Image (cartoon, rainbow, N blue to C red; front, side, top):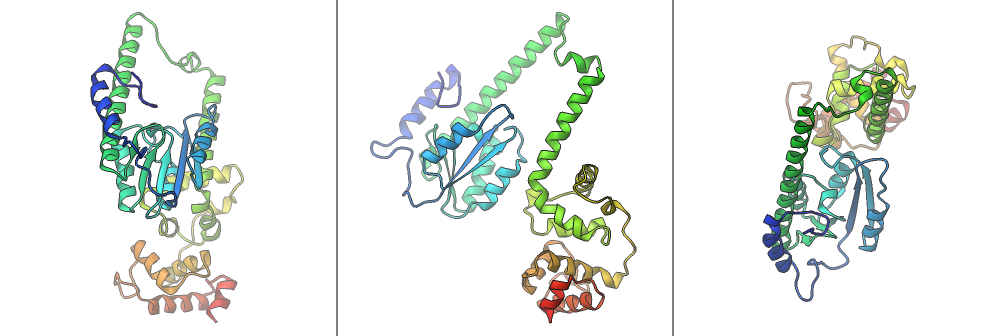
Length: 338
């Protein structure tokens, strides 16, 4: 038997048949809500050889107002496009996929995404599966199908491991012969492929960190630059210092950033540090309000000049004025303060 998009074995057939029967009403298919509910489509393919066009067409036909496409492994939970979609989803929206395996490859990840949507008052729908989290039947079906899919993948993994063990026992070794022989041409090809994939992933997040690095380095220490970058980002998209340095070095190597950003930051007086941070936040967004800067500093876990954790607009205004006197404010931002 094969469900719509998910192959299952004989052991799960009775349960799924019951779920399929209970998941459809005589007059309502897939528990659809009124058409005015915004539908947001998500299409995913695993490799560059695949195309998300069929999925996008199906999502468009289902009435999705916007469709987001991504090329990434289903086992990778840190997918930048999916993260942005989940951040963008608002109350009353519905995230739509063609099949549940386009969203997640494990039940734990699937339920994690559903919980994030429910926390925002949003819903989830799969076109080829009887799943719509607006109804109790849809939630039940979601868990059963997710568990069946994960069970089937576990069986495939076990069969694969058994096949590899049998091949090794017969003297056959799998894998790329060029890699096994450490052929220079093969090693170079693999290295370039990994490098290209890494650069593509960096390009998807460049808007989060490149402008800050270009503007703040080497005048500001990496620790402070990292806090400013991570301030507005959701938790699952925040950077570590090692990861940021690796990304910057890759961009410097390819000429996207000047080599000066990697030079050692000069010593800064203790009294100058907070004004420099506030000036950097203001420089990145000249229209930002004093209260918004307070929120950003609190998220960065910066303490006030008096060592407190609670920031007030008056303290931020004082630091901006000090930054202007020290010449740390961009010209446009300085004019805004006048």
